[in-house]
Length: 361
Image 1: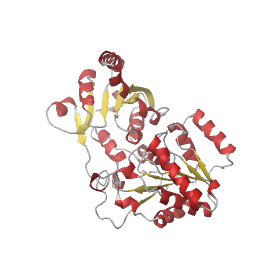
Image 2: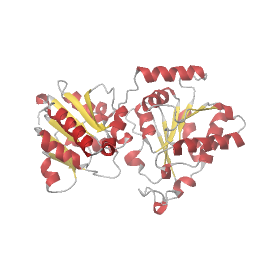
Image 3: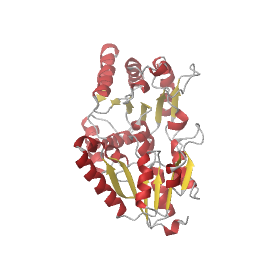
Image 4: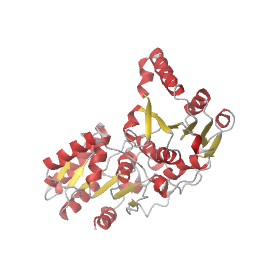
């Protein structure tokens, strides 16, 4: 395949927020290989902020998960409108970065000259694409590198510059965060951003340990900014952290609670201003790494080699995980799928604090 002949390309990533963000280097690399090419993306509507404003992106097409709840005719109309818009773009290349069956159907409908997807199954799937790449060639490889295998399958080798994950907060988000920092007397690089929550509770560190870490960092003179998504369970975790601090901390007022108050773009703008980010395996951790902020990532059952903070800028991110649980990473939803991960509930505060101190130094 010759990059010089590309006029339009479509990158499809129908997954969660972090997955979509980690697909951004594919968009950047296509644009680098073919500056004349218009690169579009297709994602779920709720994940759109992860790619909106990407400097290499021409158009962002969206699938609303809520279409199914609006009735069969409304859904059919929305799907037909989307397909019509995609067909009107006349793509030369489609890069499908998951094993979602929709990708195979779209390639057959859009009929690009070239198409690539993970090697998933024989028959209909394999015959839908001109090129295939290993879905995950090795568990020790990062997801960003695996995504770039899609372009390796087409004959292109990424450069170090292609490896960067890109997220653009935008001027509006940056302005609001700047206003919040002034309002609360926080300087750029003068606070630690802690986002201990995840939609998957089995990935979370217990609230009392998060509170103890906040106390230890505050005792060293670092103001703490706590964040979470608007989800009730995530906000409840932050409330538990605050309650533990109010009960035991000498100066609990050193914590600013912004849980549920920030958009994803504003979260990116905030973490870009932090001296350090501390969080679990979640999209905000990937956002922090993309913004170039040093990251301490707390990992339990999920694989940190595959999903840890991506570090092409050599910020020296730290992954903290239990060294007494040979069973991890097990990939399960807690021990025996219990939603409780012993490798996290027993992870010492001191182990996380050491990682924070190394990066703060």
